[in-house]
Length: 415
Image 1 (cartoon, rainbow, N blue to C red):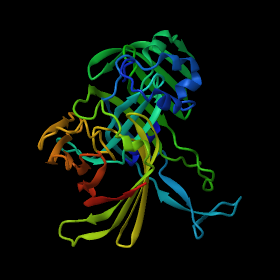
Image 2: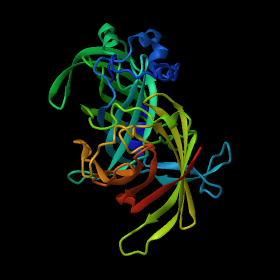
Image 3: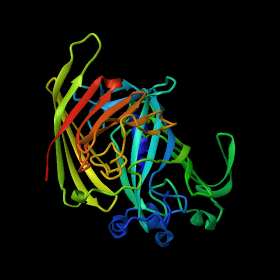
Image 4: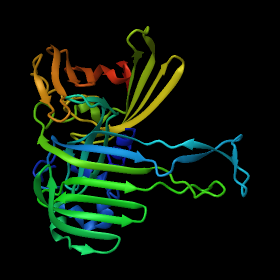
C-alpha cells in the first residue's frame, strides 16, 4: 500500500533481513525494476538490499490523521440553470457552502517476502469509525505492493543512505539531522522538508533503522477558474495529513515463514459467490447477490500478487469495488500453507494486535478436512474456512457492524 493510498483512505477516510530469503528471489526481484521512487533518484541503492532488521512477519503500524479545511466561504459549481453566469464563457454556476471534514485511523504494513533487491508488503487500513475505548474500526479493502528492499515507497530508507546524506538548506528544500521527539522519546533522525507557496511536506526517518517515523503534508486548495463579479476567486479546501509511527513488532505463529501450496504455481483465477445482507435494527433485513472474482498475478515461493473484483446488489442498486494486494500466508487471504496449519487446535490464539485490538484465532478444526480462522475486534469480524489438505479458502464471512452489512461467500470454482 503506497503512502498516497493510505492518505486517500484517511481522508475518506497505510523489515527484512539479508539472511531471511526465500528461494523465489529472481521472481520477486524482477518485479521491482522501475517501481520505486528511491531507485529512480538513486539507482545504486538497489545493491544495498533490505535493512538488517527487516524480515517476513514484521508489522509496522502508523496513526494516520487527515482533514480538509475550507479556505473560502463558498464554492462555485457549474449548473445549466445556475444563477451566476461567467461573462467570458457564458457558463452558469451556483454558489454552494463549503464544508470541511476529517478522520483518523491505523495503517498497518505486514512484510510477506524478501528478496535481494525487492520486498512484498501486504497493507491494511482501519478508519476509526467511533472514538470509543478501544476505538470502533471500519476496515478498508486490503492492499499491497512490491517495492525496492532498500526503500519501498516512502516507508523506509536504508540507514546507510541516511548516514551518507549531507545536510543542506535552501528556501524551498532542506535536509537536517537531529533528534525527533516521538511520544516523548528523542530519536536521532534525518528530516526532509519541502516548502512551496501552496505546499508543505516533511518526513522524518530514524537514522538507526531507516524507518519513516513521521510525515506531514499540507496543501492549499486550487484557485477556481472563474470568480463572481466584484469578488476574489475562491479556493478549494486546504488538506492536512499526518502520519506517526506507533509500533514495529514481529508476528509469530503459523504461516509467517510458510510457503505457497504447490497448486498456486498453476492457478489463474478463483471465483466466489454469495450474498450481502443489510440488517438495521428495527428494519426488515435486505439481502442481495454478491460475487468476488480473484485474479492471481505473478508469484514466487512465499508470495503472490492478486487483483479482486467485488460486485454486489442491494435493493436494485448495483455496487462494484476493485482491489489488489499481496497474499499473506498467515491466514485471512485466499490460501494458507497447509503444512504450517496442520497441527492447530480449536481456540488457539494466533495473534492479538495491541494497536487495533484485533484478535486472530482458530475456530473449528476438523482434522484432515478443514479449519476456520476467526478475526475479531472492535468493529471488525470475519470467519474464513480453509481446506486442510490444499490450504485453499473455501468460504468466508465478513461482518461490517458500522454499515450493518454482512458478506458471505463460498468458492464456486478455480482455473
